[in-house]
Length: 396
Ligand SMILES: Cc1cc2nc3c(=O)[nH]c(=O)nc-3n(C[C@H](O)[C@H](O)[C@H](O)COP(=O)(O)O)c2cc1C
Image (cartoon, rainbow, N blue to C red; front, top):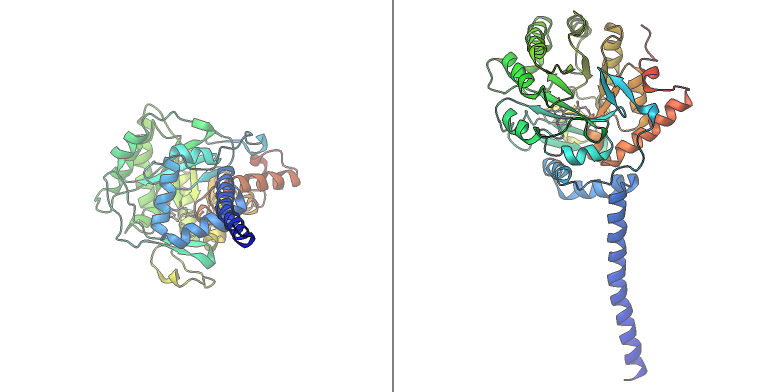
């Protein structure tokens, strides 16, 4: 073979090696970064890649399936710092960061989700009977706003299916508590019964139960937040809760769109008797559309979540903390994607926080980021525990 032919053959082999090594190295790096839960890699590559190829509902479904089949970053090696632990409504939380309702509506992904590092996860909303929810499309990403609008309308496999899926679960698995969020069927003529059935079905399984009366996508649901209706509903639901063999903490989830009068009424109802309602979840999505929104999907109907709801939710937390005199634990939710934002909600009166939309844009590593930053902020300000910081910014 001539010198030229030998050189050409060598170059071709080198190119072939490069063609194998470069993608191989990239795949190894990508696999390692996903396994390790690399924050930047998820935020800048994994989540944008997913958004490029899948619409919002398909991406959501893939996320639930990933959790179901345990395709999530490896579990953190060290236990949560004791500064992050607290006892709220009689339950011990290893850290205050929880998954908000709506991601795992049917309790399919509990196994994987507990590994992500949440202190608690809330499944649901679950309705008594299975129902399909609203027609698609019904979820929209507002990329420039890091927000989501959804009008799922309580698509749910129903009580029976969710119960059967979770009935053998050991509570307090992996230091992660389980909340079950209850909704009502669209066609129900007796909403009170929908919630009492939920209490009956899930009291044994759940670490806490939620009466969700604040989703904007079920006609008439939010009217249950009115004083008389709320009192009637809670009287019956709590009576049923108190008759159960195991009495689980019962929380009420409210909207960020309430008037001052609504808030006063809700505060009066939930504090009407000791041990009645054990907590408030503040807040659900908003039906408002702040002028700051940039993405054209802002005109879609439904509930808006993420940064645009953050301040509305934090203000509602502070208002309700003041109106209830700090006597009812609050779970703060709405636009939490950093330790700073979680800390603000805690200083405004939240004992725990939750997130959903941050997971859409940052993926599972956002949980460990929030915990790390929150721990730094608590230490910086000389707090020895979360509970010392709760309500620090609110004058009672
Ligand atoms: C796609 C989607 C579905 C949701 N479904 C429910 C639900 O079924 N029940 C509920 O109580 N909240 C539901 N929520 C509201 C969230 O639990 C949370 O209160 C709200 O999104 C604000 O938090 P975030 O800004 O961290 O997302 C849903 C939110 C989103 C984005």
